[in-house]
Image 1 (spheres, rainbow, N blue to C red):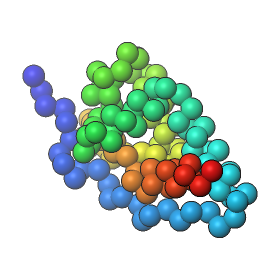
Image 2 (image 1 turned 120 degrees about the vertical axis):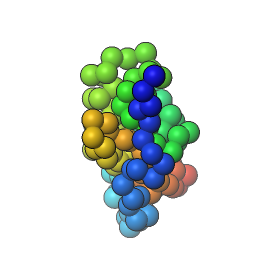
Image 3 (image 1 turned 90 degrees about the vertical axis):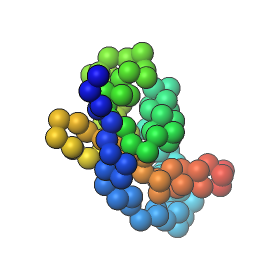
Length: 113
């Protein structure tokens, strides 16, 4: 069986820590945007999976979820657009990792409710 996992550290470097929005209005908008990105159980499952692993590729995510590859790809696209994950093309593989700064920002925004 071919090893399809990415090498540890193969994801791009994490972004600098995201600043908490200065105003309540900006915080509300940021929280709504991030919550919308996590507004599907499959996207929550993907984030949980990536948090448990150092890196992952789309094929491994598909193996873990009862969804088609194309559906998983769409969910990954939405999570990436919101900043929750980052990806790196490694030959035929795409390694996905969580973006720790956005996870921290999301937690802070929820805690400030």
